[in-house]
Length: 186
Image (cartoon, rainbow, N blue to C red; front, side, top):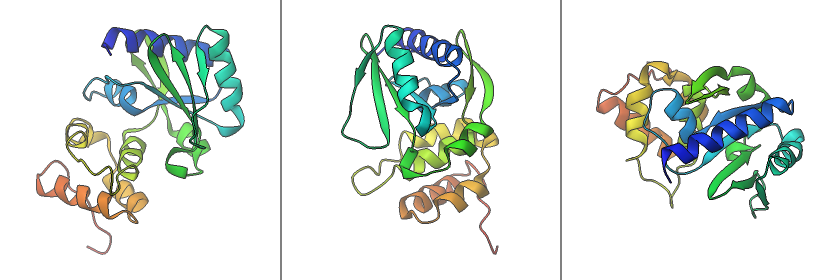
């Protein structure tokens, strides 16, 4: 997937959702890119409220995208030609979407101006995906390095403390001097 196609789809998604009055924030790789991290080459991720996900999907279908109903119960999808758009309403089964959207910051991503999730929320989301079948830290290290000054590492630690994978990654980030992770009680 080339960057130009992703930015074209992202612009279409952002403009359509904004015109439809949908509360949303750009997440995932496009949010990392907006915040100065490596470019995304995969898909467009957008966080939306659960009570607006069907309206968001319909608005994008009305804009020429085709819907897909995945088996997962925390997102839905549309395609803009070959570009996948994930409409995520319960990231990592967390129920704090209103707070995530309220913290989002308006940023420019290519030609689009859109709310973008915070770097802290991005890192929390990426760390909570880690598990026994998905434990590769390699793609996370450049993100942590590029966004390190934008991330509240103490909050990341607090929100991911139940995950041994997140704790391991945070230890690695600290050992590599990418960031100082403040541990409670220290």
